[in-house]
Length: 547
Ligand code: FAD
Ligand code: SIN
Image (cartoon, rainbow, N blue to C red; front, top):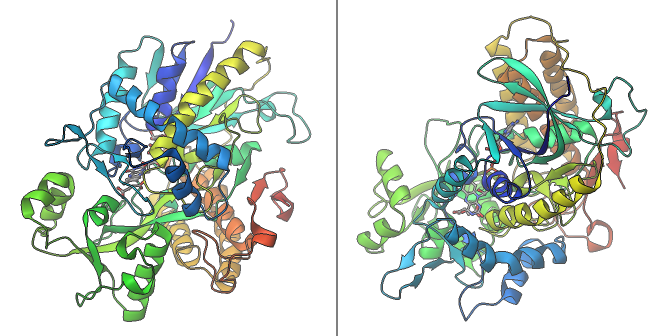
């Protein structure tokens, strides 16, 4: 019997995956699969909004300049230009598809927020729940679309390439993607899914850190899969910490974000004794670029031995605070903090992966038929540091642009799907011991947090390298030896991503953007104004680094 082959296999239902599916469905059949429910993603939790030029006082040139400045001389200007120029069209299209953005009632125009690093107010938002609104409208659209088949609770495990064919190639050059193996979390089995094109839209990897704004699904699965399959990965040393997540005594899987828009609104950072400190670090004070603010908070906390700093908006009219940030207001109230009267205790947390699977300006990776869009991708937009509210824009623009490129690829290439093996249950039936998985997972998270955090050093990175080699080996071994489960799949992915992060951070011997190493505190454009790149040659050695 002939096997079913899809045109477009989209993995992940955040902004990138949903928007791609909607556009691609105009040309062919889409299979959209996602690890959890359709809504669960980083996108869903986005607060601030989507940056796009709208005001007459603003311009594309200014938005481009702000993005390049944040990226610290490592962005691809062509990629930046593309997303900025497409911004107004994307917003227009979202509105056409039913996405609501908050309007200024008196002026009758869209209310635009200002965030750190932006020279203008240009952030379109819906209250402080922009992501929830975006997901509401886009999921409605895919659910109503007859050309999109949706599988929820379906987790991709590995990418199918020549290496899963009965006749295997000798090296990792010139390989093609034929689809994936996917683990059905409800039925507990693995399916081989064949597709002419595979689009990774699996988001980021915040769960590699102990404290993160990212939800539980963000375990770097797509990145790890692409690396194992032989795609080039770049710039993983640049991990963005959001300066302000809500501090709570009890550790949580995910930290609640206090949007940068709160600082744009006028919120000020203060130490525990109520003193302002940001003037010591940057002329833009609390609205300085994110890397500067996160490092300043980290420095103040370490210097004073404090667990948090405060963010204070209590001097503004209560009505205005509540109407601007209803979600943040209510969430803080549940923690016993009335933000109209009390200062908000905040700490930085891992937030956004600036590096990722390397792609061109069409989302194309160096594996034929494999595309990467959204946070999982490194396409040159963010460089060494992402400008606030540029990632949703980037995810949507690349979803749009890559859909045309994928369509061209599948119409021009005859792909030979013969000889691809079914999933082999080489894993033993040894049952999972949760204590082992949680020990390995937490050890990796602690290691990455302590040694590859906001401030790094050669000594700590050297230690991290030795420890991660051992622990990641154990994690992979446990995956191989134990009955397949969501826990072991994620453990292997977290181990792979953590190993890569340590490798990347150890390699770059300068400080730039989000990568700050006390032993190399200066930026060195002569040697390091370039992307760091790694490709798995199948040998897992230092030669993986592409010089
Ligand atoms: P995601 O939205 O993360 O979606 C990834 C999808 O892939 C999910 O559906 C997930 O379940 C699925 N998935 C993962 N692994 C697998 C697997 N193995 N198999 C199947 N499916 C899988 N950016 C802005 O521009 N503006 C903001 O205001 C903003 N606020 C933010 C607030 C928070 C709290 C967070 C966490 C991030 C915020 N960001 C913001 C960043 C932005 O939300 C993300 O970068 C963006 O949403 C990424 O979209 P995406 O589609 O690439 O990934
Ligand atoms: C925020 O609302 O502060 C998040 C914005 C972003 O991460 O881009």
